[in-house]
Length: 329
Image (tube, rainbow, N blue to C red; front, side, top):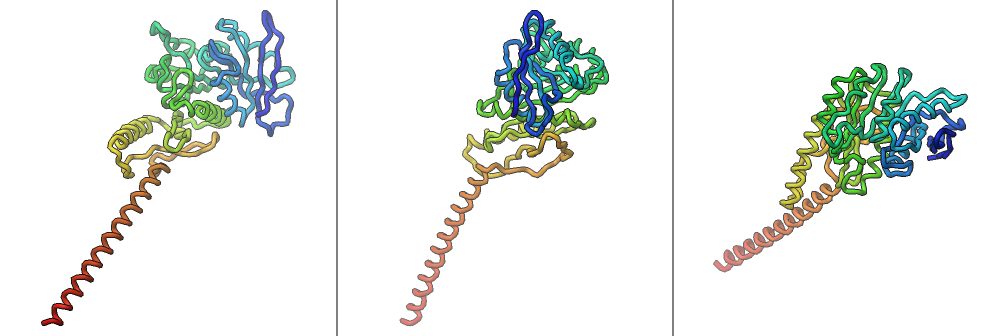
């Protein structure tokens, strides 16, 4: 995607920014749909930021900026960037990952329409909950959380409890198998997970379903793809289905059983602007499993053909023998 590094003069240090946008946008520079910042130990070139930027900027303009680890300074930087947007409509969507999410929430004003919070650090190492700034968000602001279910700094059950007490509308994307840094196993899926996350967040900003507020990103190791369930009223059923499928698949592999009776995952290849109302999609059999099934079918067919040929030969032999006996008599 096209990107334009630039520097905003500021005290005590200038702010290093990158504006990334779709190649189809002609305006120069375009108004960023989202102002986004990294975590405490990150940079603009960190994998988590770079992957998210690739996915998001394929659909909407994104401004990312480098900040310090000092939370009040990082918070103030959002305001500095917004005020620097001369002759452009001000950006009303703020976001970040990890510490950057806290800065974005603290920088939000009544004019802020969207907050994108990736890997929000809900609890500290001493198990203190950082929930008050979330409860204080303006009721008119739309908030999207993106968290991995292996994130040690954001227990999903506790986050669900906080969401239920927030005054503003919230949405939730769960990344199955992801840690606080949005890393997944196998590692080869990490980049694709970040890109997919950016795409879905951009789609959410372009249009959202007020009733369907949860979705899940997960890796299909057999097919080598990163999948998105689509927006749901709840992802509880998807989580149960995926857990069941994983358990059965593991048991199936241990027993070297290649039949196709494993409940398959809820999978939909959909774009970032698509919502889904499918509650019971047809199960899908993986490519690997299909190949195994075909191989078994061919083997069974060969065995059946060989058995039939042997039976016919045996019958023919018995018939000739009976004929010779009759002739002799």
